[in-house]
Length: 137
Length: 134
Image (cartoon, rainbow over all chains, first blue to last red; front, side, top):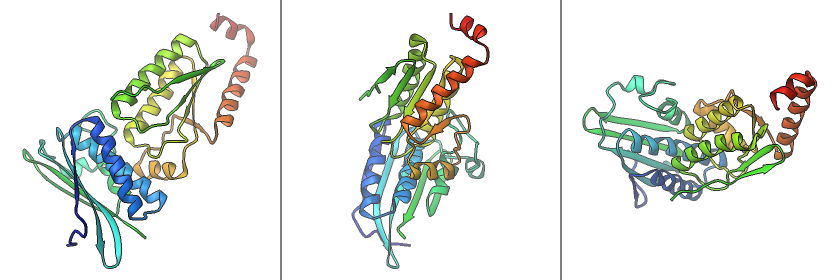
């Protein structure tokens, strides 16, 4: 496990404006971490998908963002947490095109492809936490 | 805060240039405004400029696909212009190919594409076209 090397920032995501704020906060961190333009774009896009999931499916929650260092490489780690209904079938939820609601069913599966590490922790009835990391090259 | 994206009209084409980071409500508002504007103006084309857009996620991607199909139903063609390379790479990896949306690299090329379309449609038979637009 990597120890957080910086103080983390916690952002409340309770409105669609919160999703915009999440994107902006991640952009700043991605630039600080000197991710390439393509990697910045991928990370911000993944953050946007997950922040929206937190809002729409989780009924609101938080994004915790921090820069991490591990074996001489730096990265951005984002954790999206909600106390919503949780995900009953994780494999199904990670399938392309599967959607529980109004989206295109690419939020979870798509954002997983856009980052280096993806950890999904969910308990039905208690909530969901998705943690992603994008490493600099 | 609600942010309304301006819809400009140049002859028979509606032009929308997205310049700010829109929230989901603003995106839906733009979709509705544009559909109404196509009907009100009788425009034959819609150009959406995303030169300034840093990310297109699945929500915005769906809006773009929806605008393309609904404008087609309203007798207008949509062209998406100015997509950044990093945005294109990300969209493909995300799994959104935007198959039904036509694209051009620049605004100039997009406008020319719509113009060519129009000429082609006109030459296919002047009479039925004239009736349809009467």
